[in-house]
Each structure stands twice: as structure tokens, then as C-alpha cells.
Length: 330
Image (cartoon, rainbow, N blue to C red; front, side, top):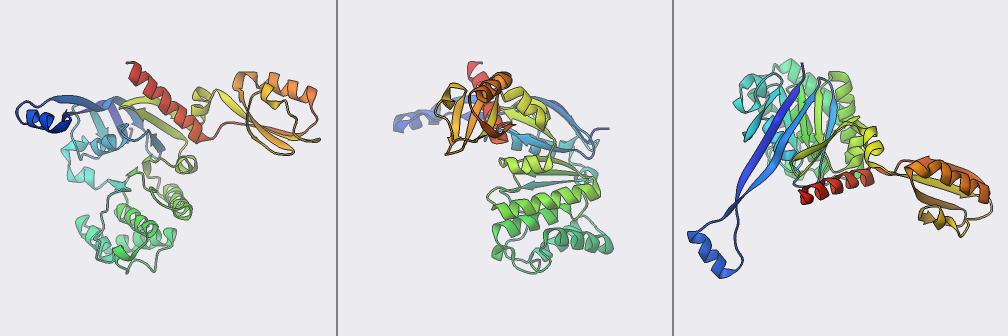
């Protein structure tokens, strides 16, 4: 049975349209104009137990709204969802004990208290046995390397340390489903890697199902093999991460090293994106790779070469742009 099953999930908002200037503001007092915004538009997908899935989209695409509906924080306008075999917006206690939602821009810990006090509060809220609570807390603090920081006031911790504490608080009751909304936003590379490592190891130990939104492609590449891509509320892609490049990446990056120096005529073979005395990078159409490589090898002494897919950031940006173009055309 799927952990998450969404069918035609839709959320619309009625938004007041304020007109410019003093006259427009005065008219708005008597005759208000509204427009309907479709934050999520008939989104359907399923996630099986134990999967780690990335949920990608530009700002305002509907990612957070979808997570809020799946966690029961808001009601959908239409459509249905089953999460852990519950309807999320019924907000049954049995459901809420089996999932956790971590939002990178929201705090669940008491700002002026040590994190350990907030952890104790979570233990009481979830009625966790002391032995289970202590074992899980020790496991998580060891995974994240923050054993000595739990007694320190949360406001005195760095952003990365606070995010680690937020993650610990979310996992103390051993949820079956973890919803992560940009958990590494604003963190430096070291903190990002630490959280990625923790999530990967915790997933391997517990088999928790994870749905992750992030603007950092390092998070996605490190953790997820499957991605959902949403733009303007519509689901554009649901499949393997590697399939994104095959479907939306029409170009390849050819890295060349020349034995006798970089030639001057490389632009005839493709777009030159980088060059120096002996090496160069070319952007070449995927369907012309064999033809282009044959022409280069016939004309120049090549010491080494490799053919790579474009960076994931570029592929995702192209997906977003295609979604925007389709929305504008509609």
C-alpha cells in the first residue's frame, strides 16, 4: 500500500486585486476585485514505503502548499489524498503520530530554552517511553555530532546547528513519513553535507519514507533517485532523476584535452563554454555527438576527452522554463 497517494489534488485561493494610487485604494473600499489563483492544479502521484523522493519546482510552484495538504495543515479545494492510510485533513491523532514536517524557514523549538527542554516537551506530547526516547535521542545526536550542544539555548546556536536540532525534534517519535521543506536553506556546504549524511544513514537504518523539497541540487543528487517536478501548480515530471537529463537535456558537454594546444576553430563544432592553453569544453547537441567527435579527431591531435551530461541545475532550469512557457501560452 502506498505511503502517499494523491489524486487530482487542487488548491485555489481568492486574492484581492489592489489598484494603484490613492483613487484606486478608495475605489477598493467600495468595489473590491478578486482573482482566483490555482496554487496546486490537479496533482496526482503515489509514493511507496521507503522511497526518498525529491519534489522540485521554482518559487511559487506549489510545493509547500502540497506538503501542507499532505500533512493536514490546510484543506484542498478539490481532489483527494491518502497518507499513511489516513485522510490528512481529518487530523486524527493516530495519523499525526506517524509523520513529521520540517520546514527550513519555520522553528518548532523554544527560542530561549535549551534544545533538550524542547525534546522533553516532544516526549510528553507523543507519550514516548523514556527508554525509547533516550535511545533515539542518543542515536540522532551521535549521527549529527551535536551531543554537547543540546544543553545550549537555541538562540545561541548557529543556523546549521539549529537545523540539526529541528531535525532531531522531528525524528524523536520515529515517524514513518518525513516531509522536508527546504531543510538546508541558508546553510553552508559543511552543514548541508552533515544533514544529507544524517538523512541517508537514518533512512538506511529505519527505512523512513522521505519527500524532500530543495533548491540545492546537491541535496537531490545525494539523497533521491526519483523526482517530481511541479511548475505553476501542475506536475510536469514524475520519474527517475537520470530520466530528467534524457528527456530535457538536449545537449552534452564534451571536455577535450589537446596534445598540441587548443585549436582556434572549435566554435565550428559547438558552443565553446570554457577554454585555456590545452583544454576546452564544448556544448554539443546530443544527437550530433558521434559526428562532432569524429570531425574533431580527424582534424586535431586529442590527448584525452570525455562526454558528460550538463549539470543538473541547468537541466532543472530548462524544465522550469518550459513549464513557464507552457503556462504563459495557455
